[in-house]
Each structure stands twice: as structure tokens, then as C-alpha cells.
Image (tube, rainbow, N blue to C red; front, top):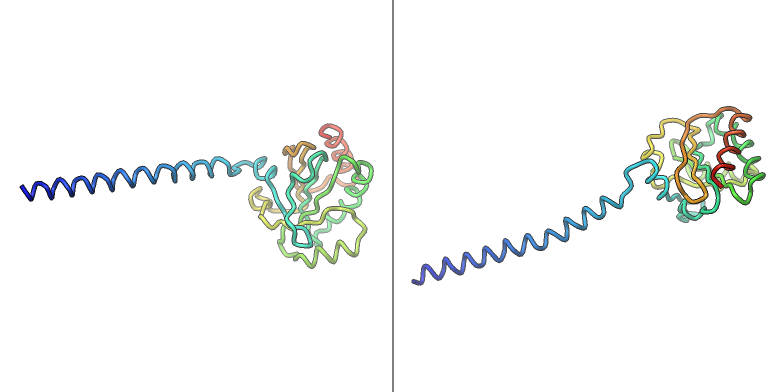
Length: 182
């Protein structure tokens, strides 16, 4: 009789452990699923939730520019096509100062924060100079620059493109995108 009581107690303890493990795992599984579903998995998701670091070390979210069409321009100081497109972007930013902003984002291929800072101080472009501290360029698969990402005034991804169409082509494209999405 004593042996059967021991088996009974052991069976109850094992049943309680099994029940306890399964009930504590379920909330963890739900939490992991919830985290996975809120993490972006598309270019639009990555872009719309993007954050960068400004040259003073402050975090800057794309959402801070709602109300303006945004051009995220991945560039570096050594990239001649990147620098050749800066005057056009500056001209459009001045023409549409209330509804358009350029985020000049350094992905950090070779440039450092100090390189971007020196360039910004030496030139009169009024862009928001930012560092790609959260690797948006990797998430988007950027393999070359200039690489441009366009976002509408509501913060929604419009399109992305690599390269340049020259001053006239870039100017027309920017104006068209701004007029359609401001």
C-alpha cells in the first residue's frame, strides 16, 4: 500500500510539472509570435520604421518628417555620381521647402561620421545629414550608391532606385514624385 501511494505521489508531481511547463511556454510562444509579426519583413516595412543617427549622435526616426515627401539618399563623400546629384536635390528642396526634405544618409561603406561632418561643414547643402546606424542599406540590399528611397508625406514607401538620371532627369523625377505625393 505504501508503494502504491508513492507511485500516486510521483505521478501527481510529474503531471503537475508537465502541466506547469506547458502553461508557462504558451505565453512565451505567443510573445515570440507577436514580436515576429511586428518586425518588418518587406522593404516598405523596413523603410517606414527606419531610424538613423544624426551627426550629434541623436536618433532620428523617419516618422519625424511626416507631412513632407522624403528622399533618403544613400551617399558617401568619395562617390562622384552622388555628389553630382546634390545640387539638383538642393534646388528641389529649396523650391519645395514646405513639402520636401532630403535625408543624406551615409551607409558607412568607408566614410565615418567625421567624414560626413567635414563634408557638411564645407558645403552649403541644407540636407539632414544622417548615419545609417541601424543598417537600413543592408536590409534593402543596397550594393551601390547613389541609392535613393522615396517616401510620401504620410510616411509610406513609394519606390527606390539606384544611380542617377543626370541633373535634368533627377529634377523631373523629384518634382513628379513630390507633386504626386505631397
